[in-house]
Image (cartoon, rainbow, N blue to C red; front, side, top):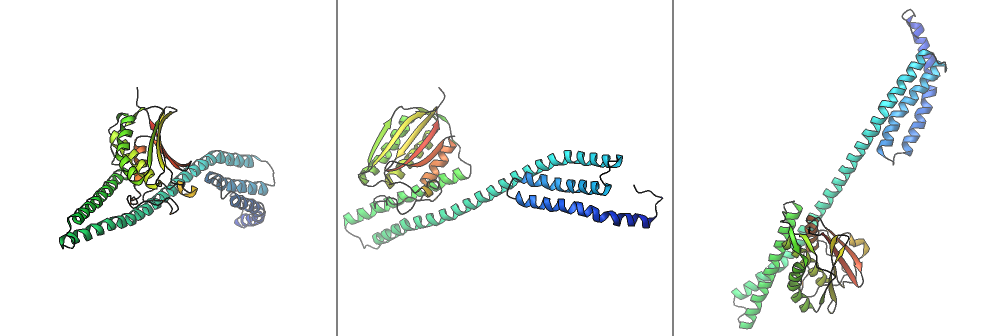
Length: 349
């Protein structure tokens, strides 16, 4: 114990005498702590924070015990008690702070990944849409100029050009509608008027709308329902989901293939499944089928000339609309092709 009566030189000499002893005891503890920190670097951040608190405390205890000569005096007991109290208070705080920092870091990392993925999807969407809009617009312009310049004068050819212009205009209108719907979904501006919707009526309308397309391509369409439940949702948006799934199935099913729509109940949900004969999707691409502007690999069945490739928005819109209904949509390989399965909550009795 240092007292005011001791000369300064004696105090300095005493400090210089105990300093090597303290360092000899503290440095090994710090070295072991550094090894432990390196070992746990890939573990939870709370573990690292706890070690960062414990290493200085243990090093200080080692130094105090060494300098005291392991003589348990009242001063040493007080020092040890204070260190224990500090550890009891600081260690839980370090664990809590470590968990909070880790949770924030994970959230920030996931947010950055989502932002990068969204930006990549936007760039890909702009590229696809620019290409898809350019093609029909160029055709419409060429045919309109031919009609205006009198290059085409035969009545039958004029009617054919007019019909093709009308078809291309309809296609462009559909793409614009898809973009508008997708923008509402991604912006969170989609507002649904929820009501009890008989699934039989929605499915019947969707089948009626897509049957002519299937007939032109030579694709058979079947409906197999164990029951026709009533679901909670918006009939307009649910109809769009089913039409998009059927259109996607028809597009990727070769002529003489079959598209089957099945409806059943499972664990209190209405389950609607659309099976196609596309030949399957590579497992590495299954997780991307609902991404904006994703069209699949070239190995999938190519589209016919009567039904040009879509803009890659239909499945993304279907996913957004299903999730807006508090449902779930999944894709998997099934039989000769793929199965897109939608689960929807039932309407209250």
